[in-house]
Image 1 (tube, helix red, strand yellow):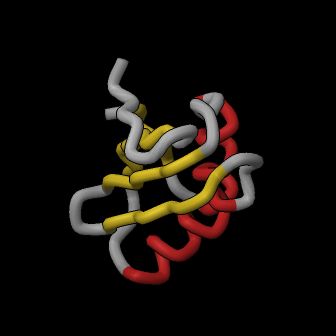
Image 2: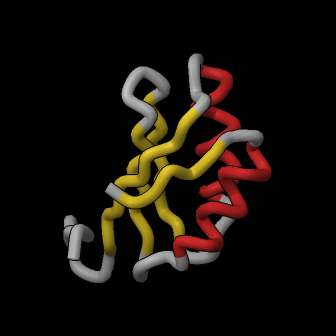
Image 3: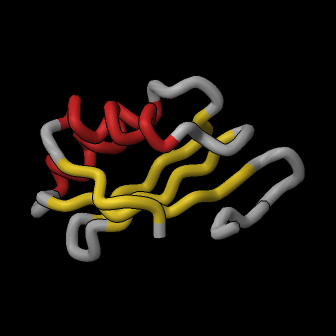
Length: 79
C-alpha cells in the first residue's frame, strides 16, 4: 500500500492531478479536498501536479476524484 503513517491515527496519500498551473489552481484543489470528512491537511503543488493529503483514515478515491472534478481538474490517480 502506498499510504504512509506520519503521526498516530493519520494517513498520508499522494495523488496526481492534471491541469494545475498556478497558485490559484493549487488553492482550488486544496479547498475542495479539504472539505472531505477526516482531512486534516492538503498541499497541492502545481509544478509537479502532486497533491498530498493527510487524513484520519484512508480516503475513498472516488470522493477525492469528485472533489478534484469540482475544482475543475482531473485526478490521474494515487501515486
